[in-house]
View 1 (tube, rainbow, N blue to C red):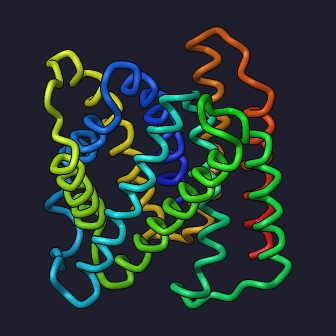
View 2: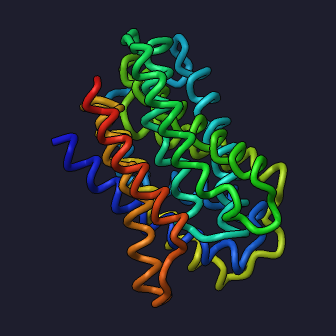
Amino acid sequence: MFILYASSAALAFAFGTFFTKGVTLRISIFKAIGPLFLLNGLFAIPFLGTGPSWKLITGPVPYLHLIAALSSGVVAYILFSMVAKSTASVSSVAPAMAPAVVLLLSPLFLSTSISLVQVALVLSLMAITLYPLRNSITGINSSKTILFMVIAALGNGAVTIIAKLLANEGVGMPETFIARQVIAGLAFVILFPPIGLKFRDFFELVRRSFFMAIGWMTSITAIQKGSPLVVQTFLATIPITVILIETVAYRKRPDRAVIISAILTAVGIAALSLTV
């Protein structure tokens, strides 16, 4: 069943990532991120009555929520910055690298093992996937572009690991998702008040949040029910799906570098999962 959730998450994230471009064209990214986080949490309200009772102040749970919110905020800032200067498909490659990060971090946090061969495969995969995109973001040099993508991959991987750690503490999907969104959303709203947003801007915000909320809720459920690495393997197909959506929507052939990176990401992550 968790595979069905993972597949649904990949499709929802692909559409949400595509609609991110529309948000950046109309609204300042700093003003948009806070409301988007809060809207994401709003879409989870119907699920408040599901799952176990909340454990907001139990053991390590509050600290895990804070770290997850911080990681999500950093990833959001980087991805919105990249989308504003490039395309949604370019920005989608970095989060798709999260399975490699999950594999590297699992021995530290999930008590799993990893071989030197797997470490070498992970590092090689990240290098050959990110290198073609080094000049894909206007106004950002190649070194900074690669750094941004590595940080985004690390942040997304950290969020995945924390979702599994919260599940181990008995925390359900609604609390895992809503707590992270509300904390991150309030932080951005305080730091960058969404002053000047117009009513018509909310269509872009709500449309994007709808798909991203579905993606996060189904991915968290899949992670809690199955293997984080397998779930993230499905999510590695997001860049390819975003490319297809952009091609249909814009009737324009995507850049070769993006296609190469998207295919290498999906194939590489799939091959990596077979070594586990």
